[in-house]
Image 1 (cartoon, rainbow, N blue to C red):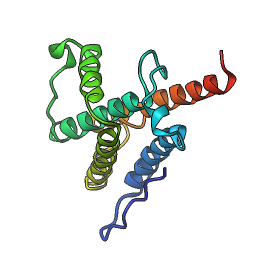
Image 2: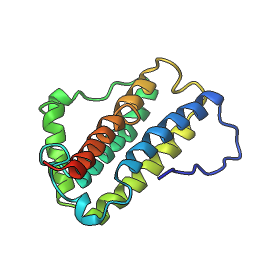
Image 3: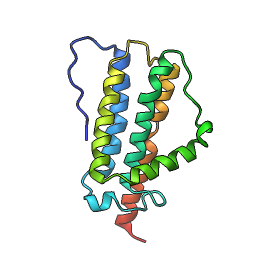
Image 4: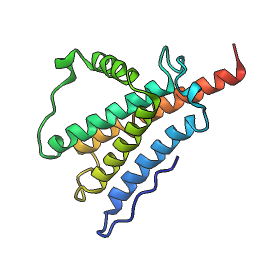
Length: 167
């Protein structure tokens, strides 16, 4: 599912366009990994341990939301709170997974689309250089998004392959 970016009247730097292309390529690979699956398969556990595709999408969306929450602070020179203060990343993920499981598939998909669109708009709206090279903002964006999606893309593809081959 390729996400078409709306045309902008003001120019976006070549660096920003390349970043958006990288983000879009990783996002498209993720969405293509589960494209065509019926709803019943999207909610079936077992993709990774007891996680379903729905759980993975809720998880990925949570991390995009984390990027949207913390990037403005990072861009302004601040430091977001550490996950250790919340019991660590694993505890954070466990709480987020439980919250995602309380949502319907339709709600998870709607949240996925809305959050990803907000993220793309946010990145697109930043001044040139904000996400350049080795900036803290670029690192956070990579860890929460386009560097994170491939792990879940691979898991979904492997799960689909196991289903074809069988036990």
